[in-house]
Image (tube, rainbow over all chains, first blue to last red):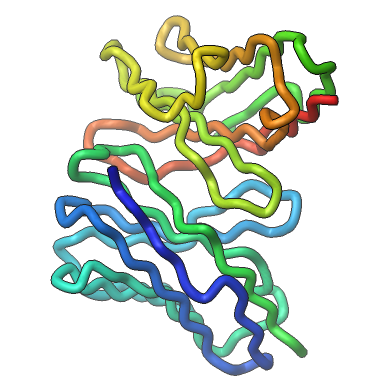
Length: 113
Length: 114
């Protein structure tokens, strides 16, 4: 089955800096790559996603880039703010897994004011 | 409109007892997923329902776990003879199906087995 690796496991930045989280996956047939933000005690919230026919997608301060050849995708957060502090999960779906999501292990992002 | 809802929000049970967890998906969503999140861990896929098709049970960790979806809407996840390692947050998500992969999660049920 699909295997997803996420790095780093923790990331600490100063307010205003950029943050980058990277995920690699194993199934070359996968075609859907979402990112979820989970605050303490809350449900995961979909913040951005990308399909395999697109290389990059932006939404205000958040962007996701996809390299299908290398089988990795990254989340970029610019001008970080303290409210961006949370756990971020990447996930992969499609191919032999169809709609079920395989998640990375998560990255704890801390933005220091 | 209303999002995915789950009940109960918290459940404490004694080892060996059976529990039922409920999920109400977004109205009209044909696909429903169950995941499990252990403390400080990522989400682990359990089971997936799509319309009238046979469910994908490939993620269920043992035969103590089962789920059903009645009338293509509400789903119940049942854990029989609970063990301490079953303690986790159980999350449900739904999508509109038909090629849509965007999954929206419910608030989860926190299960504690003592």
